[in-house]
Length: 454
Image (cartoon, rainbow, N blue to C red):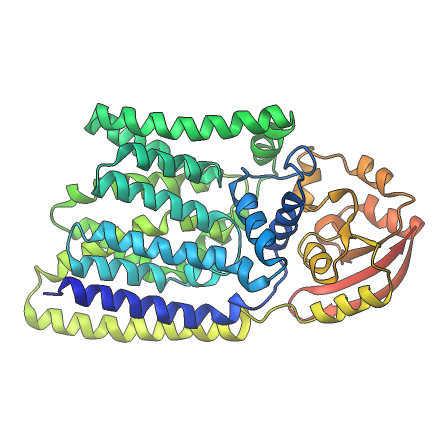
């Protein structure tokens, strides 16, 4: 039997190994959506209000967390990336504490399954907001499932929901679970959850009538991903197969009633993702803590009922497979996943040399916010999120935006025909109103084109 102190030591060792694996990603700036949120955090730290002063497609809590970090440290890529990393580690600790209700072996196995999953390792240093939402959600589960602190649990659920809307799905399932298992608990959970959720939504709706169209309408009006969604779903199953396989052992486990809450959350959430118009790999992270707990309990339970000789063989085989899989993931992250932005420094130097300190930037949302922060330049019109769905959905009018950009002195960073450069109107705007300056080829990201517009 694994003693409590031993399990805490193992948890600490797993967390330390996790930090070592992800450290390269922690200190490396890369293209991506997180740069949009970093720049928005800067705007909030300057007193700007989301939805009123700039477009934001998500609830506000993550941006205010980033703004707090920016206010203290300024633009520090490590400080900013510590938000998702610490959120992931806290999530692992909450998983450990929840699973301790079943036993120390279940607790340490659950935390290991979670921390060793490829998607968890990769996304732990990218500020997509889902990491914070997952942390708050699983903390809420701990305080309700383990401690019976329903008012406190509801507060965490409310905070999760005003971080990412995807958290609403498991929250709804959890509330239904407690409705049928104890109406007093349901009332307390609902009261504190709604207090936070409705208060935040009401406050930002009063601040800007664009709030609901930005946060809710935008996601309903996205184009359907189709084959891309199916490919993304399959890739997540393949990359995190050990976690999903362990969760499937649930069908062989005894006393499955103890896992009812976690199964009731996981399955509906995974099915819900199939209904979305567009899915991204990090969407699955909400389900991973629940799958890890199910997988750990099921694996330990199954190990307890199989013959000793078979148990030794199975454990040895699984250990070898686990080490091989983890090693492959770590090598991939080191060589590809955390390689950074190959031409980022060149682009930043070019911007500094070809513009003065008061110049503005505009363009591809995956890199323009990062370059603006690195070179201390502003983004024109505070229009940070320029991904194509913003305009395809109709939430923002592309022609109005291009008209507003006319006559403004800025450097426009385009990325071949991706992002905002996907639109013919943008390419025509660049041809008529801007001068081509240079092209930068990045092995991972493709070609970046820099224009001067006046």
